[in-house]
Image (cartoon, rainbow over all chains, first blue to last red; front, top):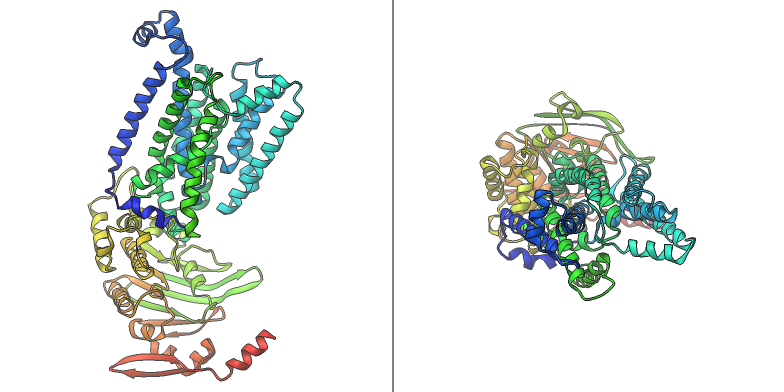
Length: 343
Length: 267
């Protein structure tokens, strides 16, 4: 499948310079980060809260800012960046605009890890039990990928292994719901699976930041190889790239970035799929160039969606994953509609 | 650079694709790799390009193994133009040609002056300057082939390996590309080109290698390789051959045995 025809129109437009694009997106992320700090249910005098927090005074405003708003805004940016950059990297690897971060099964397994923590009632025993469970799930899935699609395996084997892991994790998640001791526990699991940034504390942030940074580095370093892969596997290898290494570098990077993202927020769909797709024409369709800006775009979209769920009058608050899916699904329909003429 | 392959065996499962093939190319010469479908031309080209390890036999690059030279170095010294290469994203032509500079890239840096000069030379040589503002989705099959050739030329490697680069081209561009490949060889690079057009192979190549059934049936000057006997054995069809104004030509004649053969095959 090629996406040649549908994209011709967009590519004719004058190409935005990469720096301008990245700069604009970065400014947008900073602005949305500020708005995310300012928006919430508790009334907050933001300048006062900033002064209190800076001087270390334990005021109500300062506590709301540090304990509630700041982790939420930070996680919005971090999780969004992880989803965007991973989506771009996996679309580049699969050379398919329909790939998304969940395709290699790591996010399903991370969700299962957290569900297991719920199921055995461990969530209350340790503050970080949930994200640690999720990260453990992501690590197990990554190791399973290495075992199933060992060295020398092609991209197709990798996708199949991802599909297998995904459906197995889904089955075990359903089993946990099926056997859940009481309806309340089941409801808790279901709500968590919908994906949200609400009520996460700063230790969540410190837990995932190092993992995500390593993941992002691995993904960003794959940029030139993904550019080369545009011309197919033989040509990429003739340009000096080791595709085995590339695949495992991307699996490792995606596992760290998305695994830790899902571990703290649950499943937030479509960000990693929509954002690279929107930005691709603006970077001249270069998969390598797409990585960093997709991270920024993912951060902006996630922050914006999380601001929206707090501004909407719906109570209880809509889950972030529900909102991104509702925005994302029609986008997917339109993409399929445009792609269908190329088969 | 001098590439030398010896005793190359390649099997696909139990089926031998290449058996005991020897092949060499050095800078300054243009070699045509010819033979019927399934003779092993692409397999041999991929082995030489270090894209496929032979099941036995060795390929030496200036006397060293591929591992001894390193992927990156080898990528700067050998350019590979794949047959029917896919282009998976609708990139602008300029961006696509620039991918040929990837083996020369420095971490976190864009194209430098040397890269841009190489891209300009490649774009001019492959005659794709007029297409630069378009994307790869907006050009014809022949134009696309020339764009991909420009990408391969932009590597400015010692040796260019091209798998059927003129199959989709019109007569004028076939001539232009063959001329370009020969000029490339005259300027001190080595060219190995897989061809089906025997007339152009005879006219432009210094040396031909005729593969048949996974082995080298004949090798040498076009005159010594393209004999009636070799052609009938390799292609299973007699050729009408001749020369006009010093230009050799080969036209397939109906092979008398063909009807009976295809009948027995389908039985």
